[in-house]
Length: 371
Image (cartoon, rainbow, N blue to C red; front, side, top):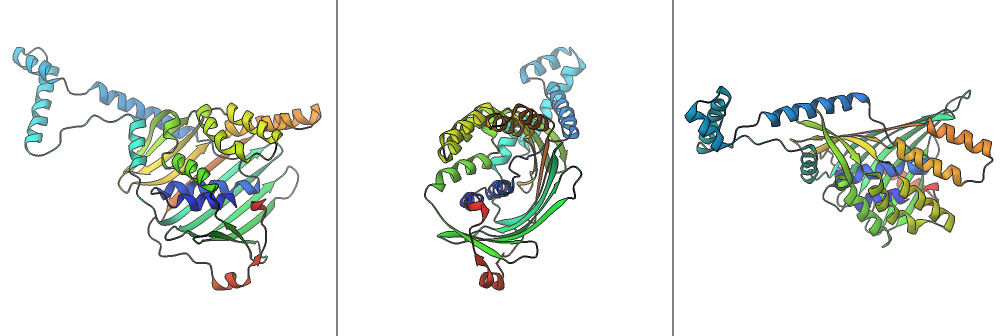
């Protein structure tokens, strides 16, 4: 139930929108889907390039400094300088009239950092998530939605549809419905597979979870901006600004290792975890923020390379024949992953409750999530 523990721990933070994002991503792990996040398409990158070029042009045509412009006006050196004087006088007049002078646009990283700092507090809403993985050995697609209310305690409902496809075999599908109900002392997870019966699992809160919660809360409230190697402007559609972010894999891996190493059950798992975290390559994601409403509305992350790297390390450490290992590594090299998350209906919901009949009939059990 760790994904629920993480999610509910986040809801005490101001920027709850990123908290739920993490919770949804963690929810995929128990179903073998934690190795999938997304590769952004080429279109956003092209838009980023065009936008960056436009920004450079804007900076090149900035107003001439005051002293040079005044001198040019006196001597009449060039029409360009004279135009600079007029622009300066216009700004000065605007300031006297109480209007702000033109402000030079911020660089993309500063712009995104400011946008994260000003994200509105989200107390409820809905997220839709699509996660797709593919490789020669088969593919998996997961579609999920979660509607949540975070105060005074987290309540949520959602569904998870998973489809596995193997070459030459019929698709294997699973549909899961669930509710989450948090109290001061514990979190209950209600789950139903297909047309089966409802089951519940209750997880007490543990003091040890706070360190993990704080780490992910900090990371997801600022979009890993402190570990960003590069940030570029993407498409701007009205008040919605998209950014393309490249995260430093080594810096991210170092922080991740601090969280995962204590959880390793044995020495072999500990060594595997260390090798993975120290070998993570850079990854990218795009994020769209509505700058008028201060809401994160869309996220598309590219973790294909980190996942390939992690999977390769795991396979190489397994006891396999050379032929088996080479076959699996070939599949990993040809694998793709894609994650797309969208948010909606923020702060527009009244409540989410577990139906009385489910509360009364759900059978207590230990779900695979707890093992």
